Amino acid sequence: MNQTRHTLNELLVGLFNYILYIEERNIKQKGVVLSMNDVHILESIQKASDNSMSHIARRCMITQGTLTTNVAKLIKKGYVIKYKDDEDKRISRLKITDKALDVLAIHDEFHKEMIDKALKDLHLEDNEVLNTSLENILAYFREEYSIKPDLKEKNVE
Image 1 (cartoon, rainbow, N blue to C red):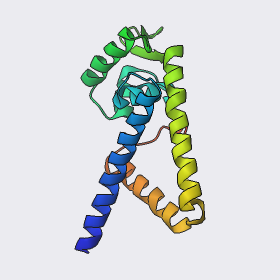
Image 2: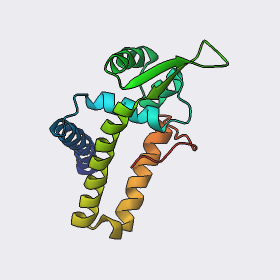
Image 3: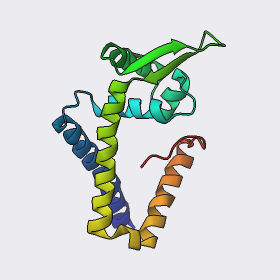
């Protein structure tokens, strides 16, 4: 069982680190001057059914203070617009700009190419056991760490 623990840890940590590294390298090569953290914040704003600051912070699994700091930089760079809710002025809402849409198109293309290549090279679509196992791992993390998907939100690929 000790070997299984070690292997699972290596797989999860390794996959996360490789994807993040390759993803960041790819967007830099395409001329994007943002960090992956910034890109993922833009993606969260785009896909969220509730664009309030508090919801986006929860979705990104960061504090509101951290989000406030990051959003201020994204506003200054022209990627995000922050505005007050029409009905409740205490609520700040976020909207991405066309400039952010260009970055997200590059990011989405990276994910599409990564998944297409994995499916082609590794024949993952044929491996129902692996797919079920990966779905179970994701469900476990969502449940264990209270990362509940918003049913109204678009699926992240």
